[in-house]
Length: 405
Image (cartoon, rainbow, N blue to C red):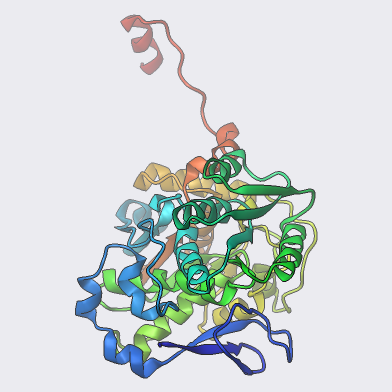
């Protein structure tokens, strides 16, 4: 058994590997602990490279002991050397991991595949989550595959395409008249009332978060088992940035890569807590009002905010906070240079990257990996007004020649 237990990230108290997520001593979040000697004996570059072309090629690093994966084929997505975008930004070695091509078109397929597999390992009777959209669609699809009912709590006003994606898979979608934090609170209360239901980002959160580590493993493997100089990661709760950091440390711990201090940079819409705290050297303070079109990153009370800030600061990185108009322009720039239509969170990543380069925080020669976490078709309605209209003609050659002259 490679999962040794859980451990509080604040006070260090240890717990058995059960569906719990907060410390009963200090109320801190719990993190999976592994038997690293077992992992060292079983993992190797060769074994990984011969594995499935999905996140489950890294199974030896994931918190599943006995259950067959609930696998829709997520992970091992496109790894792109973005020469065209790099030329515009002034970077020679820019790489993109494009999770817009996952089965439900976001990186959430990585974490949900792991969490729903863990729910089956625990013998749970249903699964659920609180979501701003991407997680909803992913959980609904994986629940369908696992033959489990799904209960999904979303805040009022998220994109219709994301709601549709969850509903088409047969999930029970509960729209809460409030913010994501309100939806998450109600979902937490339901999870407490139904301990045999697996809420992937609540009572299964320690295991769920481990799925994002595969974004670190893939970056290293695709770079020839080396680590990048810098990464740029979009932030909502901060969990994604923390997981990628742990993933790089896992590879170092097992000797699959040489030790290297990767500089971690985050990007988050203007006014949100983590970037604000990094930029101004303050503590991570919750905000109630989130005036942004980037709903997938609009979490006012980020559960992993203090840990994300700590990683950014100790690695010498920074956090940017682009405004919505910068985000949309960055999204369009990515599409026009690399042919990738990412969702708004990806626009936040590219807008943050652009600022970091302009401010001299990233050198031209640095090997940089930026993470694109979702597909633009999910948030198309937010960018339509900024696009040129179609060119309208009658079916006559001379009219075409007139408009292109």
